[in-house]
Image (cartoon, rainbow, N blue to C red; front, side, top):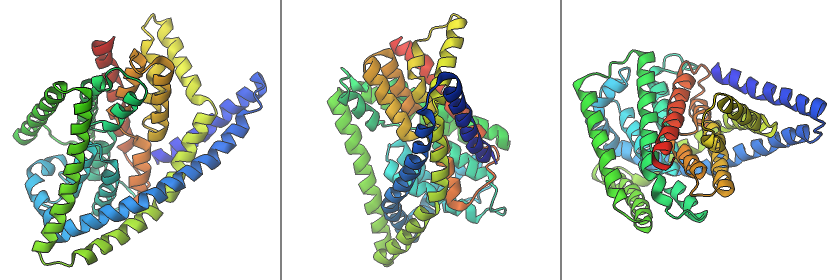
Length: 410
């Protein structure tokens, strides 16, 4: 229902702004731009879906081997003390907890090509337990928020963009970004737990939180001791070695269980192809809505309004130049990436705006894209409090990123 209202709002706002520009400003290009964006966005959505087909087929094939080889069940049993508290509606030791963990781990390592297929696999397994197939369950929403909050330990792509655009030290945003994404994820979990009446103040969850803080602190310390080139090499190599290790571990588990690894892979790959086709309409809808919103100039007006309000209150407006990246990130990953590159090009990669835009890009994930793809893959229409919790995590990430960048670079 929430996505329905958002979809309608995108078009009505775009139409209203287009009329204002046409009638009062004499801008005859606005409506052609809006219409062009609908076709271009629909094309982009289809291309994304087709592009996902190969990755989905590959990783759901690998996951099927792991499932039949017993790895997923082993992960489920290992994680059950934590997951039974974070996802109390999932039966203890259910295999879906292993799939959820694989998705979260892939996101943390920046392995988008592996994270999405695993996420869709997890959503399908959660849907099997859902009694009302059109309404999102509590575990689905918690899982979605963990994805939209965008916890990332190794932001390789952002550092690469900064290097390409001439940053003297492309890795200088690493620690601020890690802190910002940590706060956004923590906020997402807390807000969702409040909605779902989950008690986080128990020995298990507090211990896990302490361990996670220690891991984050260790990573921050370790990478702060490295130079730019070393950091890029270590982060990229570690991510790919871990990924290849997962694949080989799954295959070896299948061999040990004496299953036909090839047939298991084909079975999972077929599921991946079906999923890729299923999400096309949902992806077209959300990307077309975002496209017309941007083409109408609504984003520019929004940024201008924020800048005027901050100036009127006597506040510092240094951060405003990076806001397009922050506002676009929940809507479109590629759009936010373009805004980040534009900010670094216009202001400089080593400027406050350039650095802040980079931290915005990595502090959260594309909330509406993830909602459309994940819920669309299983036919969920009533998202309940998923959007509210996801946007709360996004907002926390934006605030944390702004404050942290003022501390580090202001």
